[in-house]
Image (cartoon, rainbow, N blue to C red; front, top):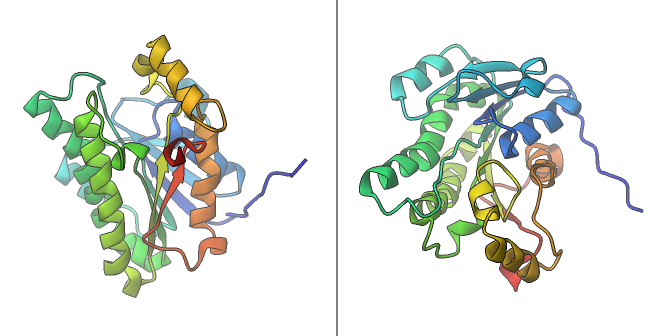
Length: 242
């Protein structure tokens, strides 16, 4: 049995945007904290889930509000790791133009707002940015067109920021999760035929869990990935290679 790889982030300041629910952001935040980091989390909700309330400093933050984001960023002078995980999707409801625009504003422009606003704090630390994209960045999605478009933009944004900010010593990478068991995927998982088809196509024969993404985030933030920037790491149990 291969043991789990551990990382030491003692002394590091980590900020996870979009971690108020029990999903990927929260799992990443917990893993960083368990590895010694001081972790702050944000979310659009008034409070985070109860199990994390005692663990983290929680800040309510609307990533679509430019003034709010920049005011928040102005109080942070040193950030070692920024994780952009705020996202919204509604399966089967994304053809409405207004909601399509909202999805892009949260998922894509929101990630850019946070990264750009926190660029000075990241520069001080020669920090790392980890954006959360999606497997849907590379697949068409008839029921999630806004989500797919936004996540494709996140992957491209990651490449551009990696080039632009290399001179500041900032590495920028992304993770593209596959089908993960989260509150966000609950509607899709209620479709038994769809859920079964996902498992049948996935070589590892299961849906992923938020914890399956956290290890990749820690690797990308660590010195083990010191020569990795502009990458988008797919974590999908092999779904995309079939």
